[in-house]
Image (cartoon, rainbow, N blue to C red; front, side, top):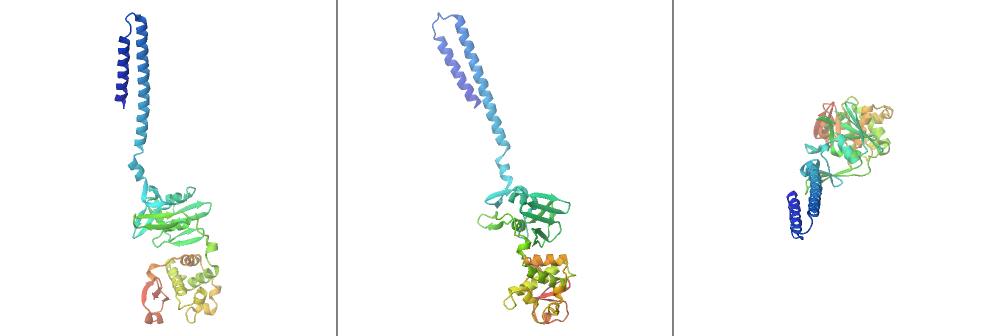
Amino acid sequence: MTRKLVSVLLSAFALLLLMGASAPLEQPDTLLAEEESAVFLSAALETEAYVHLEEAVEGAVQATASANPLEVAESTDNKLLIDGVPAPIEVGRVQKDGVTYVALAPMAQALNPSAQVAWDGSTATVTTPALRLTAKVGQLYLEANGRYLYLPEGVQLSGGRVIVPLWAVAEAFGATVGWNAAAGTVTVTRGSGAIQPGDSYYNQEDLFWLSRVIYAESGNQSLEGKMAVGNVVLNRVANPIYPNTIQGVLAQKNQFSTYKSGALAYRTPTESCIIAAKLVLDGGVVEETEGALYFDSARNSWASRNRTYVTTLGGHKFYR
């Protein structure tokens, strides 16, 4: 570009010199000198202006070049779309055993830029005007607005960042997750902005009975051992050959003796038993015991003789 501009200026200058050469010979030398000075000054000024212009253009080009399109492309994840827009690369999407994991803080802020994230060394807390979410490293759930979302692999710490399944963060924010097989992309669609609070989501009667039977039958078991007992109760509720309510299942003859004696209603479940009940009511299923309809701890029980053994978890054997 510079060479073209200089070439044009030189051509113009040569033309002016030719025009000066064709002027009458009687023209005073002083006038010719003044004209030549003016031409040189004008050319110098124009050249300087073009130089400044080109410097500005080159500066703009360099500024654009510094935002390399490839670097811009690499700063987003084209395989994870939020409302159709590639997610920030900081979200750190990874696949583990068929589950999409993301870094909690960047994903939360991608879903809601106003989200505030705090870290106390073991627990990440995300807050927005409509949501409070906590994720403790090693814990088997996220707590969001009093709801409990089961994470079989737990809350993880990787590369100094808390990572959790994408579906759990999306659900906490009232968003939905989809899969576009043709494009090979995971899609997140924003929704309400926050999960329905637990106080209005959980049926209080169901929570009352389920937390108490979990406490009575497996109060000394691990969290997943407690959940597995709750899963059996809900599996029966969903099965047409059993009553369709939790209390109805517990009241069946020869099934839950603590209910029949009346003692169950007066039990005071521990916090972990209440959490286990909420996890189950929120859809949490312990994979090892999936589909089980019976559990017991006896060696020669009716279930052991008549039903299909599934697994042993803690102090209980489970059967379909």
